[in-house]
Image (cartoon, rainbow over all chains, first blue to last red; front, side):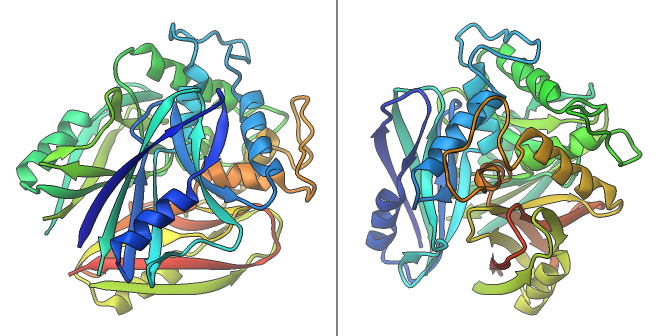
Length: 138
Length: 138
Length: 138
């Protein structure tokens, strides 16, 4: 069985990780699939998808802030970005964090680890964004 | 249904992102699958696969150049690479960018975002490279 | 057909890449699937999964050491991590390297490239860790 869903989110800041575990879990539950896989895809070039800790909000803050130190919006390390829109940092972060991810489904639930949440990774907000979800299984 | 294809590319420079969206799209069209998923895998350790903007060529230039500032071929940050082949930077970039990626298929077309292209990511060319594509669907 | 397995590993150091190709290959062989795909998922937030060279051990040493130069445990680039557990660097590395990966199966074998091995990526060990493997195919 194959189910496709998409949902929208509004990102409130330029750089932020937004926990979308509940939205994805709802889609998985309603898919009524016992065992299978949930693929997530982000159809944007200045955003990504990642999994990380959902207990202490300092973790996502540290990720976003440190990525920004490594790859600042205005460039660094003696290089000036050529792309005229002023968001080359976001494109680079998107390629490093990635835009696709797959999580297993067992008994209609995502098989996430104890501390894992699914995070939409915004690197050039605030924007209206889409998340694609595809579920395969039995 | 399960379809496997591979194709070859020749990368012309040491570090370059090469748009392979057309090659992958052709495979998807000929697979004649209405709804499903397209998995891409790169069987190399100094290259990767990523999705990013295909409108302004400055974007891929900025990605490649800035990755090279962060991880120069000769090392940096007080560390000299141990690996004798002079391409440890390429191995590191490969692990960060990644070697596998999955894109959904709807009505025989890849569900890419408006600005998204699929890029073979060469970090130690010029070389002859392979791209593996597997399509699953109905 | 859909098969799920998990296995445990004990990581001996804080930061190390551990070759789990044999463990994954065994699962693939015993699955008795001719053609399909092997998805790997790491249910941890301070570890990841990557593919890289398995010939010269200096490569994984260079990857781990250089990632640590870019993202040291104590922070760098003028930023002090907020997360109190002293492992924000590991969370960041986990999001960059990633926690899911997919490899094709042909004639009951993983379609890895000549020099490719599958590496559990420990960034905050030593710990007991789990690896999830799901195999789909015919």
